[in-house]
Image 1 (tube, helix red, strand yellow):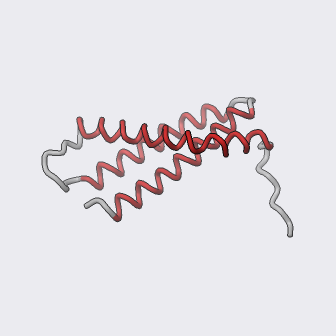
Image 2 (cartoon, one colour; image 1 turned 135 degrees about the horizontal axis):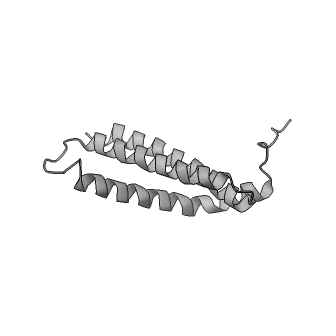
Length: 111
């Protein structure tokens, strides 16, 4: 069985950092999502009527959170430090997972 070569420039320290930090990073991204939901609820998405605009509210918050997370990830990716690059990889991966989960949640649960 032939294994795939690792991504260019990513050594074991990068992958170790990304793997070990993922459970903590995803909690930070979910916290950022909650803050974004709260801020949008205070501004353009008032919750005066139940079930009105929930899907749009959630999708907007998820996209904003993902974009902010990817900006932080891109900033860390430029660092020569393997730990920062691993953290960058973890942030990017977790933000994509939160994006996919938010889209599924908005599509299946919210009205």
